[in-house]
Image (cartoon, rainbow, N blue to C red; front, side, top):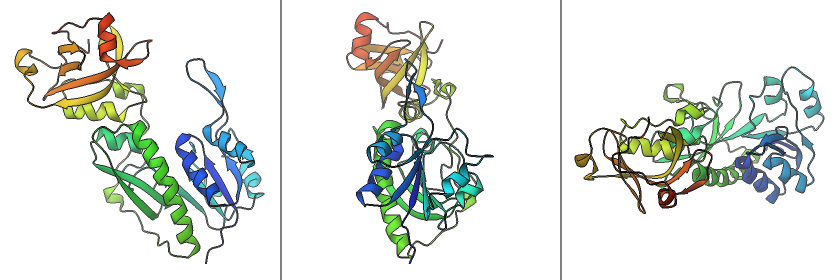
Length: 318
């Protein structure tokens, strides 16, 4: 049976919080938390601590926030905590081999996809963009590749039609904590059987940029809807209205709309009223229920158009 008496936890954003909470609820001995340094955040660029740091501080756990983890003495510092196992979830940097292999039981990772699909930094976003109907959590043993290690445990979850990256992140974060506890229980009983990933089935989920959010109205309503949901809340999908960026949220593909019989072309506003912004696409129409004007706040379309009337026939994207 595997002895797991001392755990080092490495994580940074809100997504990692439920996993650390789940370990603490099980009275696991977290000897140290490693997280990213405090960074400027938000419009005011106020320096804020990572969410994991807040939780670790409240639990009186030692905290390390190295600027660099490669090419310095950080591995030797970490070794002083004598971990039996390192748990990694959304830490934000690629681990070198001398950290991956530092603990006797190695390093396990909580990843937000059903590997080998969606290896990379943005698995939740790309699953939604690609219109997947399910996703999940993979507990895997870390190696030096990008999410290429052996699969130890997987848990699936359905993606609902209205889900966004924001809502799925919350669901998967909670599922990740549950799966992690289950994995440690099985590891202690030597009942976790590593499964090699089939590299022929691998897909990538690279980090997204703001430019990925520019909407191509020639795509179908379904494709654009998936993009909007996948990029909500960040970096958000957008179009151009009156020469300024307009972010779009809460989409709904509309089937058999008379909109395209009235207006030719894609990206044409059919109507803008209390029900939302109805726009033609390359296939079908798309109803947008929430928007955010450049420099403004996110709001219902109704609130926006009451002070900024958008006339039918207005072309978006120019």
